[in-house]
Length: 473
Image (cartoon, rainbow, N blue to C red; front, side):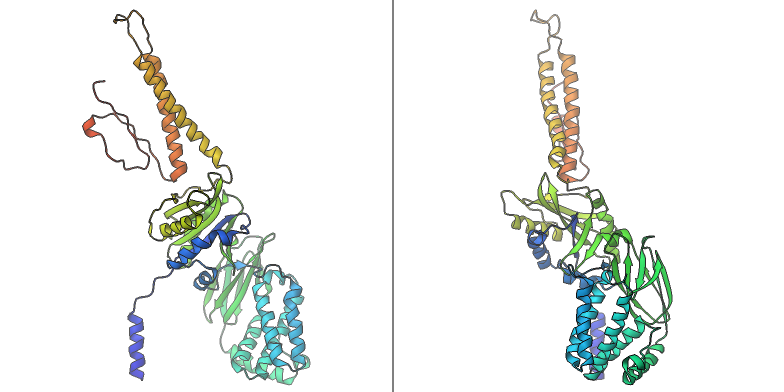
């Protein structure tokens, strides 16, 4: 049996590690649209089918407990709704209904952990949390759940290490149980936790208790999971779970600009930016998260407007924030939106282009409702430039010098050259602007004079052209 176990261990050690899925985050300006789930469903379904981590549950499983989550995860709830199960659970415990007590108290402590922003500013909630953990540990013990009761009592001691259970309040059995577990916990040693990088205005709570402003250092923590909540006025705050190890220094480095823009919830995961200008930080944020979460590329898909119409854009970023590839899909047009969104997923997955998917670069893709105006200037310049080129060519063609066969003298060549040169300049600038808006890469207008034998068949840039003619100049 031992040989078999060793053989299995060796096989497991030699097997290559499975590739980590690429995480997909959403990106929105302002509040996430109410219909975002319906709009994004075909894209996220296709990405999920192609091996991406495109759903919140999959993302949360990959990023770990230390990832920043909003201070309120159960939207629409309040402190009274959170503590109500605690009251009913504690009453059930005092009446000896330990199964009912355990169910209610477990729900109460879970809600407390998920919504620290609703509770930390009222110190009375600390006492309520203490009573919940005591009653839960004792209810589990009464039901014969030794493992669960010891784990709950250990959490109580870790959270309230200076507040013992007393015989007067909870009876001799509770006091004795506390002392037994406390001796085991004391033997675990102590660890150190430092918290840095938060906003100067941030109030830092550890296990529901204020520990610092802007930064905090806790040199004497019982090993295990400690819950950190960073509250900045005017925000929902961010919560983190940090594993502290005995005899070691543990650091939590908060990047408040990034963490406050990142929303990791049960319903959706992604960025929320106040304006399109702030969304310009998306590439840098994506690179930071890619490095933080293992170094794999990271995909960002977002809603907005393109050409003044509703659109979804997707980009794949590397670990330095560089764009790997990107595409955009208008949510109206001759093809159905679902097929275009699935085509966008294929583009992000393997680079396959498709009709209805516009390639985009790393510049702004959304125009915040000003796309029509933004496209008007390049179109006018291209149109006016082309008209001036034609007019200049006509003026040059009808030029007649003195002494020719006709008695009429039309000295229009200088004007033709001037008008043509102005038209060429306007056409070039308009084409450059058009290319910049359409592709986001580095467009270039190539203009040259060369014999027909050297005319190119293709250009190395997306936007290229040349002017040439046969014959002598």
